[in-house]
Length: 475
Image (tube, rainbow, N blue to C red):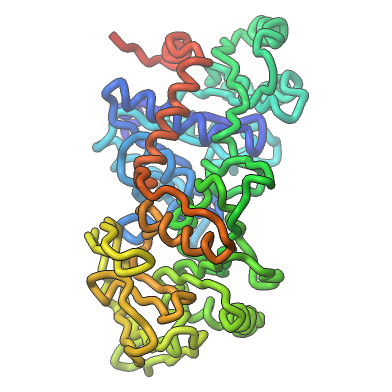
């Protein structure tokens, strides 16, 4: 692999949650504005927060966000994963294949490190941080977490634990998530520069609207006052949950509290429950029954609760799911939750396409642009008990009571008018007024947030000094 053919930058942190993933997103957007084709990258992430690409492959959710920031479509090469043999030789072979493909298609790679790059026990084993930088001859930016206190010690400690060849790769330092007047840090910044010879190119404040809480899976989760919450929604964290990004639009709603619950947790009394997509319908459906959570959902529905299933979650709400097997293997019939009078049959043929549809419920006539992604077809067993959600009946149904919903449109909540109409139905049940529906779709909202993030970085970081430190030269 010609490592000189692709300009690369690596962001590393002084520890977990230093904020480098968001900064990598911001740099991707800023470089895109400079006319460059930017590829995000992280090697062998073990994140359980996943995003399913249009090709049906899974990558870490944060790399999908970084792809959107760079205005490119998320792909597996941005977060290559090595299955089976995990020997260093095999892992590097997989990484290099991805890097070779990225070299052909992009101008610059913004790599996102993992955890701490300086822990001694990782020497010779860490493929995500400094060994990657050495392989790519990439300048490194050290992101220092100032929120937890002791930022100066953590910066010095991280650098001192590196060997000289690794330390020489660090070309710039960013102090991140500082709460307070950045001028107060000037003596420490000056001392750090003098001690290390590495330029401190800026201090990023704590961005209240963008930085997530530690338990959040959404980069754009907002910290809210409890008094702002008017609607609570529980999402079932299935053992093989397929994608977290489907529900991001709900997380971004200022009056909604979205929480993920495991199968062993109490369901409680949320305004609605969402059953998301699954990478292993059979095992997740079995887990629902064995854990007793299937019965909890059934009792919740009987009591008048609202449930919405997406993709495989939609199929689980039916009476049964038949998984067709090969010629030499018997088909498998799975017992569903029996909350919708439907039967689903899974085949080996995937349908993956953009769809334009018009809603029948919760409000008639709303235009919806979404992605239909499935390898099943669903039969309605009692047409008197359900109605078609959209003008195409194959895309989803709702019970006559409008309490149980199911759809094959995976990013249905991206459509803001439809999402707000569905939320308004929940609000009306509690006597709350309607939310306005004339707002941009979530993809536009997300893009505005990424623009805002990039603008904040441009204000607080000396970009000319950063670009010069990492070897990027613009006219």
